[in-house]
Image (cartoon, rainbow, N blue to C red; front, side, top):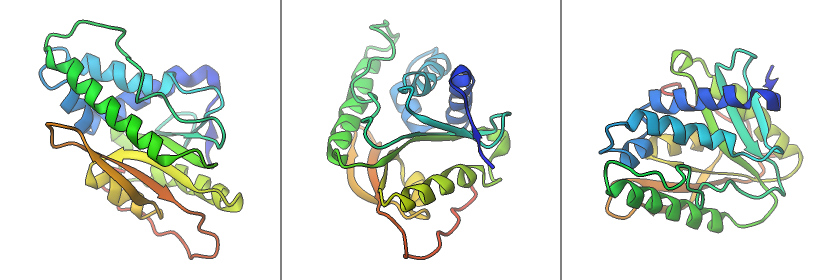
Length: 213
């Protein structure tokens, strides 16, 4: 049973997102803010805005009202998040002059992958976040699998953008496949566009590995 999160709790969902991504030592946050003395604060701002800037049409689920884990999907027809073009810090001055350059480089890669995904009708998985105390309990699966089944009944593909091979392997267990990979210049970071075609009649989905998910 999933809990449909009401719009009035979006700030709580943002807090879960920040806790989950910071707790998992997210590599992109580490890359962008690597030389910032206030890196934890900046990461929190960044990962909260991944939620608070979502359009109201987004489908937001949690495993329960306690928000142990959350997911956000963009339904067909509402476009993509503005991750690739937004400045979440409003021109804020950083301690390290290179921080703005790294943020811009990440934004350019994401924008290119969004363009690659195209405009066909699709369910776009914006994020899945599991609080660190609840990792390994298949909460991500409880959130993702029903939406994949819904997309199958609608004969609509699912898409997402993620980073690092560990995440890619997790999503591959749900039928997603990499369609394009772009590395962030002058870094070891790579982002991946992934697509999952309709799976009707193609067999039962396997469970992803529990580590970190």
